[in-house]
Length: 139
Image (cartoon, rainbow, N blue to C red):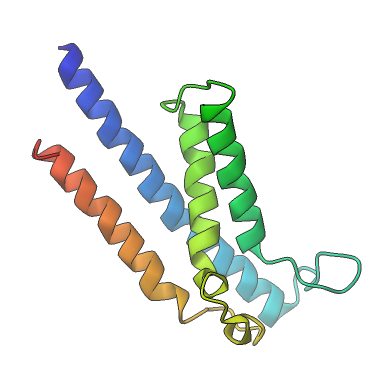
């Protein structure tokens, strides 16, 4: 019974991260669309006129959750930590061109970043693949 419970929890953890990444990317793109097309929110977050990409905030969330688990000893099975980690991954992978230094693509002010779409889909498919492996008890 205990072995089955831990198996289900790790599959639930992957599902939480999977859903959080997808929801974060959708919300980030929706907010970007509203800012760029409808001028709903201010375009520049920082006062000096430079744009703060959500890539930065995603990295901060990943560092905070990693530090919380490793240094502070917070249980990694905590659903709040899983959600924060998934949001961080979603924000970072949504602006994947930052990783490869393609700032030209990011400075065009478009609601959808074409270079990030295949990366987000690949990441989601990989997590889905892990969920399937766990479901069939292969991994």
